[in-house]
Length: 183
Image 1 (cartoon, one colour):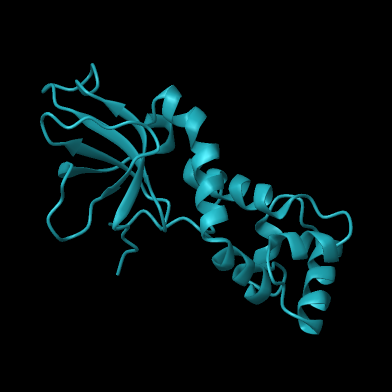
Image 2 (tube, one colour):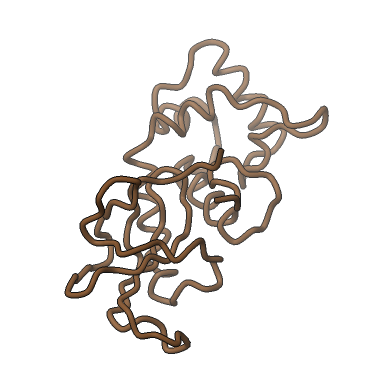
């Protein structure tokens, strides 16, 4: 079963669609608020949206969305959507902080040679072992607690944001936070 988002955040609203489209219809490029799916959705006529709007795309009646056109690749995003992406992901990470702290508290090895924490930029063997030692003593309460207890660790929130963007770009076959490409 694929990880589907019920809500998406608007990255860019194109009231007349893309120039390359055959039909001119209002279009929004969006990111899922839980699984970070990048989607293009066709918006109902006479609906105006702005970036950062949160809209419902689930199975029930939709107020703004005519239909979901489908998943899109990172490269298809408009330049405006790309500039907004990091900020919106940052807001989503902050809102769901417990989920990401749980990842640091529970992450395990992927193989005998690779731990899932090592997939995060800035975490090598030394940080990995410090995180494992510290979480055995007491689970991390939040990202700030993690940063305080692990010396020289880069900002955990920024590490997570960078990883999500790298996954959206398709830079790694391992997925930690972004849903896989199956819809």
